[in-house]
Length: 297
Image 1 (tube, rainbow, N blue to C red):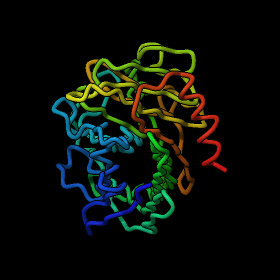
Image 2 (image 1 turned 180 degrees about the vertical axis):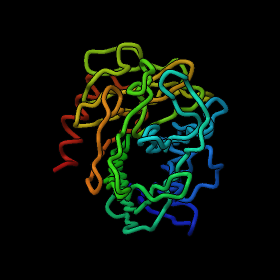
Image 3 (image 1 turned 60 degrees about the vertical axis):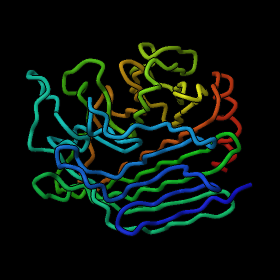
């Protein structure tokens, strides 16, 4: 079994490598325009066989970057990037694109087929106000023809005011409840298959509550099938599209705002299986009942 190891390029990124291959690159100090709400992201992300499963800065949404935590409505501020949905007006480009700034690492570890990154971040508005402190933990664990990414965040409001966390849907746009951990798939995944418990297709899965959601795509060139499966024990609503592009993630504020009082903390966690091959619903359920329970214990 090849070793799992970390390679840290100071002030830029951390690579998590498995043998000779790159599982993912975590860019903790991105060099992008303020309009894109600069924030850390994972890209490129690969399967154990080396197939790419993320897109970076696509022309239709340049603020989409691989896998990242992004919230479009933190009170009046936008920590997603680009335009903001304004009730009664539609999308508008406002001077409200905040940043998630790297404040330091608490841990960079790799041992026995698992890796862990613990990071401190400061969420700062475009006007320079420090609103949220975050402690973020990324985990990676090899599992044969799949590997498991764990993305956990502890968000503490330090703004001196209550912060309503919402989405375009809570602000008046139907079926656009995005906000949370977001994955943007490569162009070749457009038109891929969307699965959730007892559900098929993006229309049925959009906004539905479930403990997991999976996306199966087909690679260009190799024509190999690939599965990206998301697990969230809180049974959140899900935001997902297969056309015109592949995007998915838990959307805890899809239907309702969450009021985060000053000084209070909110915990978010999503486990993501990145696998070679096309998983069925039975495969996803078996992974959830077996591997996830074993990792949690």
